[in-house]
Image 1 (cartoon, one colour):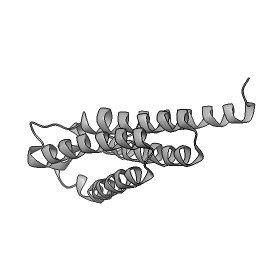
Image 2 (tube, one colour; image 1 turned 60 degrees about the vertical axis):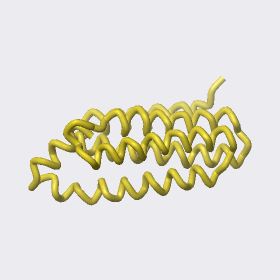
Image 3 (spheres, helix red, strand yellow; image 1 turned 45 degrees about the horizontal axis):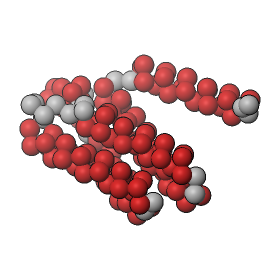
Image 4 (cartoon, helix red, strand yellow; image 1 turned 90 degrees about the vertical axis):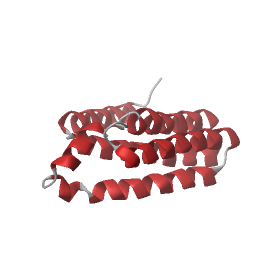
Length: 144
């Protein structure tokens, strides 16, 4: 019915992720969302290339949920100003392109979105040293 080795590895990974999430700061939670979305896109690409349509759909749907439901919904559009508005529009674009990639089996679209997420993730990672010295950025991270 299931592979005991695979089941154990998945359970271990799930516990590790739950531990990371439970002990993470708001800044680290957003970083985990970037990592999860990019991982789901990579898995979607692998499944797309191997012709595994159900797992491709599941992986890309997971990426859409993270981008649209995690990153986008976490934005504070009232306090985030122009930056939050631009990120909102970009996340909306990304979810549409991910859906298109899923429908058309176009790995180039997955590469495009992965590249966009990598750029935003790099910027997010770059603000971490500033968090301790800037209350404004600390507030931003709790609402983003």
